[in-house]
Image 1 (cartoon, rainbow, N blue to C red):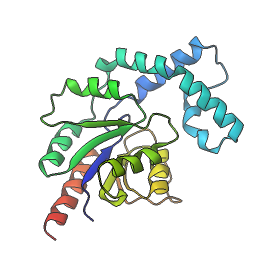
Image 2: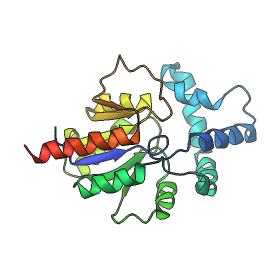
Image 3: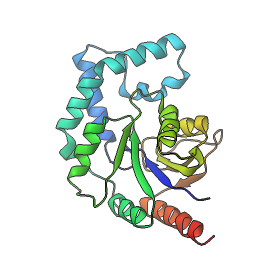
Length: 213
């Protein structure tokens, strides 16, 4: 199958930032006097009753400006996973169009990549809502005159898989991020990889095959 666009998740897929995300979330929970919620609870919200889910969403949107600010202040402590910079360069050289599609803030991701001086323009899109990544993927395809089947999403969370299943996009699930040990049997997952090297072999192999057909 030929893909024109690679859409990368940021936190946990490209950037080794989970520890920092937990630290910032703990800080904000303490700041707002929330004692009965752990940062991990934000990951498991899909199965919550609607009222609880909406309360959690409301709180997450309330603290988002503070989260974005604290994340930005700590960018120097966050780095790409080993091999991911080389992978981005190799994929671009092979002809893929590359974008980052994340629930993180565009300004944080853009500032993060400034230190790497990429020789191409990296498009950055925020799903900006934490519950609507499937909608953002569909909007991305429409805005770029592409079909959803032209896109390949690369992510590390079960909710990335759910978003892709909802919008019909193929996904590569990477097993070095947030949900590394997740059981995905109930979902449709096109590809799974364990290391950035395996991801590179997969993506560059797909492109090579597509060019030779």
